Length: 258
Image (cartoon, rainbow, N blue to C red; front, top):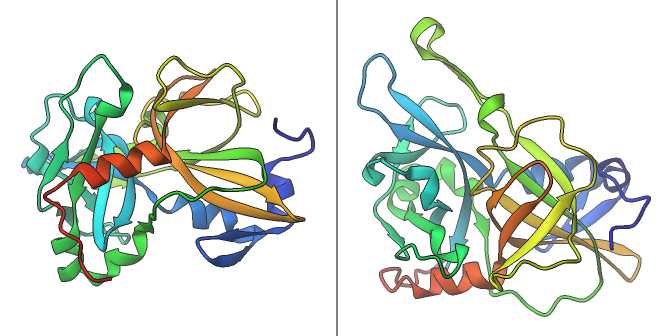
């Protein structure tokens, strides 16, 4: 249950352990949110060179840099054209290949797709810091006091390529609590926003979810999963353990030295 007094402001006033580092409160939102990145598509069109396809989560797994999103975001898109933009926005980088499940009605976990950016990162080392190091989920103690979801809603993005040669991307973070009625799909958990949303969340699929826990008087933040669908009332997240199983199943991903 989310503590009644817990809020983004409450978290910002303290600090939290994240990926082995104690992060000051004022930096938590930016530190956690940086791993959710816009999904760009190379349109091969001089007027509209790139398109936006929502959100992906940048993950380092077994020493490889992977960009994970959902297949429903990419309907009708050549996946060889899917990429991520450098932070300064000057270069669109595409992947070295992708792997996915065959979509089924059995589970939303089969909607995941992983793009391998290991070779592009070798060529552009400045991309390396954008990937979150994801290890096998351990048994985590402590009370889950909230979930931080990050994504890029379509309605917030500014696409003015033809007139101004400008794309404005806007990131949203939503503080949520765990829904006490679990979804029928065991690969998922469902969360509800702590406060009513003031924006349309369409485009946040593929974004990151991190859980905030309180244990022994301190806050701890851990990767919780990847958003797969949702709306103004609730979000559905593929559990971190299921994401781990998916990445492990990609036999084409040989382990590399970190």
